[in-house]
Image (cartoon, rainbow, N blue to C red; front, top):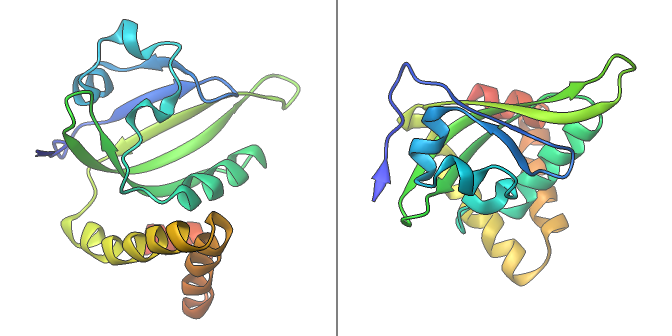
Length: 159
């Protein structure tokens, strides 16, 4: 079943530098359909949906490890095999010396239009990943961005 994040709700989590969940707000816990105890210390990929191209996570990791924020449209899966779409912003958390100590993710409900625009792109990316590689899938996405004359973040923000 496809769940819908309410319009005025923020779905928030924090992870350590290895992607293990260190904080999840009540909304995140509710949508993930796991208990807070099950989530804390688990890899964030616990909610990774099989319809998400791995290349999206590759570009997110590249950006946040460069101390840049990253944006994405993401479909997550829940413990009970439900799913939900979010528009996410991931930001590195820095200590006083500028070292990355974790990551902060804030998610909101995306528009129906943006989901419909990204679905065929993700479908093609998944096909490329299945028959070629994650790098080729990422290149496909970056080629779309280049054709539009925008960066990946600008593309995601624009749809």
